Length: 149
Figure: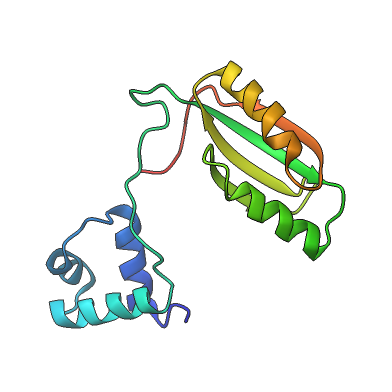
C-alpha cells in the first residue's frame, strides 16, 4: 500500500521529524481526532509504509566510531550475483546502510568501525571476500554536516 492521500503524507512528515510524538499530539498537528489518526497510523504500519521506529545515535558520539563510505563494484550485475552479495552483506554488522546504486559502482555502504586499523581488518577479512566483488573504493568521513536527526 502506498500513501493514500495528503493526510497520510502529513502523518509521515511529522513522524520523520519526531518518531516519538504521542498520538494525541500527532492528531492535533495534522487536524484529525486521535482515534482517526491512530487508525490511519495502524494502516500505514500494517501496509508496510511505516516499517518501524528507531533511535538515531550520533555517529561521532561517545564511542568515537569512524564512518567509512564504501563503493562496491561487482564482477557481474546478474540477479544471482546481486542476491548473493546482498545476502552476505546483511550478515556484516559494521555495515549500517547499503544501497543498490546507479552509476559507476553497484553498491554504496555506510560502515562504522572503531578506527582505521579496524577498517583495514574488515576490508581484508570481510569486504574483499564478499561474493562477486571486483572493486572496493572507500572514503573516510571527517564529520557529519547534514544527517539524520
